[in-house]
Amino acid sequence: MTWENLNPKGTDLAVPRSEEPTSFVQNYRKQYGEPSLKFFKGNLKSAYEAACNQPDDEKKVLALYLHHSGSVLTNTLCHQVLKNDEVLTTFNNLFIVYGWDMSNATDANFFHEQLRNIISVEAADAAKNLKVEQMPAFLIIGQGTDGRIPNIAIVHGDYDDDTLQTRLQLEYSLLSGLLGFHMIRHPCRTGRWR
Image (tube, rainbow, N blue to C red; front, side):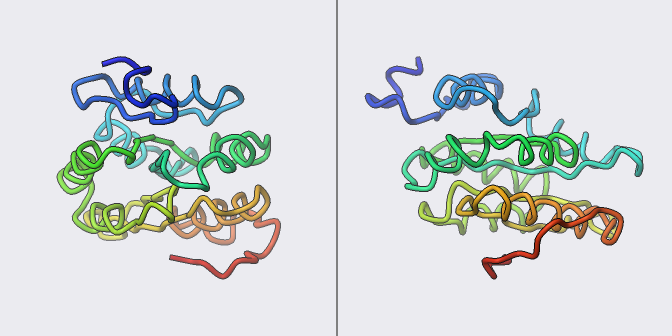
């Protein structure tokens, strides 16, 4: 299956499950260009393990980017907000970003099963409960205090660059256990928390 026959408009980033995870990244960059998020190269299990096994002074939190080409928010987020230098720096410094296209129901269901098996039932349910109009979104996963059930936050893709950066910094601080050690530039203006 090639990029062109996934969608005649060329906007669906869906990748057959048998292809490497890097196909999503290649399709994303082809569609939205550079600069771009630095997506984790590898599978979901490797991304989760990388986030969980870092020393405290290099701690990064896992950010699962859930893409949906059917959402009206996608173009604004991907062409504008995710090209902002400060937003990209925040992602690069604080997060391991893993991307998945939720546009195709079969691929979305496959991803939900991966989340359930690798991370938690709660993470799978959080992703599954997102509606098309709530995507794209970032499912932020922090290691739970008991080491088993992770802490989860959802950051929706309907923010401007300043608000997104603030939300990301706040969620990083909360989920990494470092609240108070990272500066938060602006208060959250939208009131949407989870």
